[in-house]
Length: 153
Image 1 (cartoon, rainbow, N blue to C red):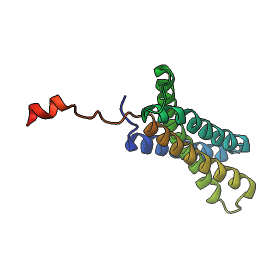
Image 2: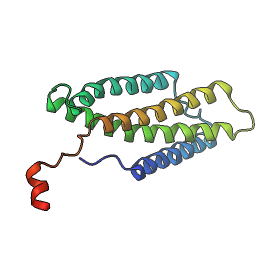
Image 3: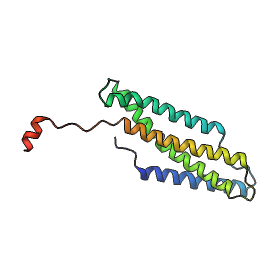
Image 4: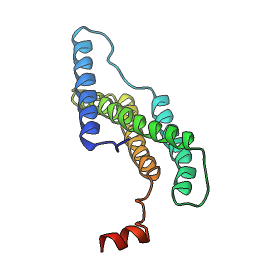
């Protein structure tokens, strides 16, 4: 499995930003309440980031050769890290779109802006934690054996 590409994260963030910004504009034009993320979303994203790093720590120890773990567990952690990076980028873009919409109003709703900002920070923290976990789950390159170095010489 290849590492998460920065372009994929950027595309997800831009898609989330554009989608939620436009959705809030359409909702406001129709006279309906705009979307604002709840505080619990920011808390949940932060907890997921902490759990992801906690799950990746034993895999990091195993990659260094300090201990052995179940390879299926390591695979699940890598898949969770990759999915969390993409979901975090999408949610960071969505929170940024909401925040841009709220800050562009004549009267800025302080509470809604703070929760959107907290969600943005938590989503960026999730992306960072996911990329760190993905890096920790990679194996170091194989050392060349004596036979291979003698053949190439």
